[in-house]
Length: 311
Ligand code: PSU
Ligand code: MN
Image 1 (spheres, rainbow, N blue to C red):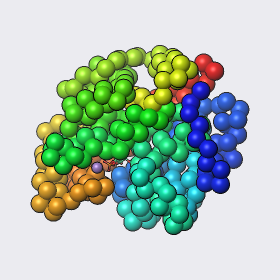
Image 2: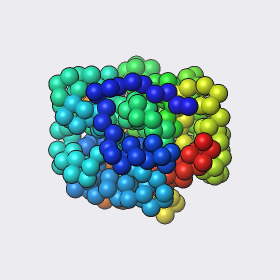
Image 3: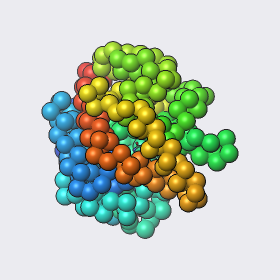
């Protein structure tokens, strides 16, 4: 039903994930840039393992994705997650563009949303949970900085469950870009696109659906009729963990100003902004970040189960 790319000799799928896929059991892909660049060690490793446990507790098999010593890998072992998290931002951040270079050099790389989607699709995994996706950056009319995540959503048939995107981005332009490329943004029990730390960005989603079964029906019909491409499932952070907008906005403004001052650009922009926002908001944002990822893992497991049930 979903696009399968051939990658003999390049892709390794863990025994557990392979078994689940062959037996039509639900599988949820998880990314690894969130581990290496999204949170500090050791919280990053603890969170990655907790997210896997949450997927299992909700009836699906987790497949954390990365490039390990040059091999595209779906289903990291706990020791591999630990090693990746310990090296942190020193591990190369891999988007679609970077994949063949990291593979050819036999390196280890942490995959972004875009690269995780590529590898998930190769393995036959259709549902993916993360924290936030990349998007159109503020000032993109000058910088042209548009995350490759959006272009991947345009072409690769994987649904990404996220808490929207951080307002380090221009969320209105991000929605416009996705609309141009035919990528639906569906709010889970929400009329608004969430802004990661807060439940609403003030920008409306395209569709609202209130159950995992309804989400799965849309995915099933889209891909069954051959309409390729991704879907964004936007799941607001649980209210009790949502942060005060003014605090987040101030941290983001400062981080953006520092990035401009220091001439940060290209693939370094997002990790720089994430690290600065994390540092400026401290433990509160870390707790919120962990809570929303777990929340997305739960929803993704439910959607994966419902999708498998549809055949
Ligand atoms: N936004 C977050 N946390 C993250 C990322 C984005 O709130 O960890 C990571 C994801 O891996 C995403 C990537 O795919 O950053 C986007 O990077 P870029 O903007 O360079 O495409
Ligand atoms: Mn960019």
